[in-house]
Picture 1 (cartoon, helix red, strand yellow):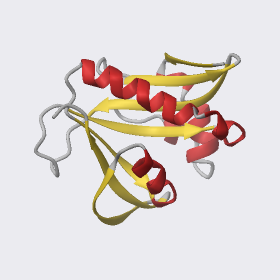
Picture 2: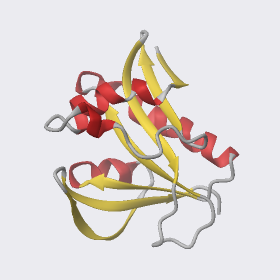
Picture 3: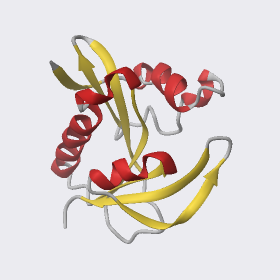
Length: 147
């Protein structure tokens, strides 16, 4: 059975490294803002094993005019468990939590390869693709939470 709960930032580093940044150092998986009081890290657990993560940081983008904004960073799911709907369940829980905090907009820098996944979750692309070195091409995706 799938269970979503808040986790410390340190529990995200291994999965960030293995799935998102395998060609970088584990130190590159520690994000600025990870330890801020307003940051929330969620983990999805399947039979006690951490299989999906997402970090939600209070961060405003100058591209958007909306009030309270959060950025999704480090979203990753163990490839062996992607059919368990861990990522979408984790995102639904995160959105519920963020709405309760009166967050108006959730945004992320999405890798091109997962753009359609974010579209499926109700996100919309804003602007053109851009590079994040050394990771690759990205697009900004957003979802209005409280309108």
